[in-house]
Image (cartoon, rainbow, N blue to C red; front, side, top):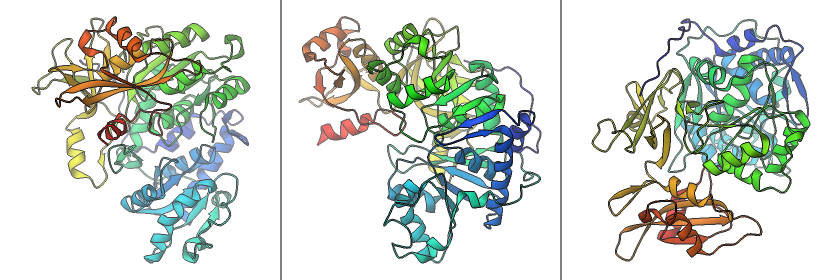
Length: 535
């Protein structure tokens, strides 16, 4: 299936930070960011970004060298990210919920020459810096945001004087005179890296260009979301995620909107607080978050919020959640799918044309195809592997040739997701390639069973995966989390599914648990449930 409108080509010389600053040159007094402690205008943002660029160069960083960003969401994040790009330095924002071993791996794998870290996250980053210092490489450490290094966890107290010697506050970077002109970068120059979640192994560093940020805004934020200058945006997904980076940086800056940032976890209470205090008009979330909010006793009334549009990504949005949310707030949830490799959403529903239960149609500028088991295009209604082609695709995985070849196949990028196309021409999610089940020789989509279970009034969350029976045959098992104050018998849930799906699809086994294992993005980790099942 194709969707190929014509778009203007970017000039060969292109710096994405310079582009975004130029867009907002006439909005010096307008508020760009509101974080937990401050409000920053577009004029202040411009100055801070260019000062940060000069400060990074003053640290000795050179063109295309990497700076690791382990940062909570505050205005320091976009300043550091855009400042690095302005200077031609490669920012590498990473998940703030990882272990010290993860950071050590990414630090060495990416050969980072500096680290910008929030003080509260320093204890898990320190071992990587100390290891480099022990090897004779002193890496500058910049402490971002407010707060001090937790007591007893500084590099000095750990006996790493070399690492501590390079530590300085983020404000020190901003003492440099603003860099007058951006680095002379090309549209296809390496701009930044994003690491995958690494749920099935070591994380993969997806290398993106300066142009990729531009294209996600040009192809999705403008024509699909219809973002505008008077919008107030808030993203539950943090800035270090590909999804969050677009939601809270590229997209609002491309139209001059205002963005709310929050360092804390996006609990229902935290989200409601931002909605009501800052009159958020566009919210970016994930299905798990929407389910939790709808189950919260503190859910605001429609009159308390000004939401005009919501977005969902991370995994497919169950129909029941979308319909309940829209009924509550009179606001559509635009469900879509993107990836770290494609940087943002390339398949999506659209305002005024939302088909809950589907992921909609291809975003203009992207081409999609479904590939069946034979390697040929899937037949109508057949489940196939989803491939995407578009201008925001990463170039490669850094230093992982075989994984790069498996994912980036000429103009096509293999997503690892399975879909079918319904009679309306909408794409219907059928699970991850490694999550699909074959029961009695027939494909069963875990998501289809999950979406059906979610319609039961007692079910808050669930995950469906394959369990081997005594004969070694795959049968479906569901782990179910009930809503607070609710309970239900397994037999009732099984009958509920049988009434709504083909009988072979019902879960043969049901287990009630308190919480589902998830990634930091809120994606359910079915492989952990499988591992637990195997003992």
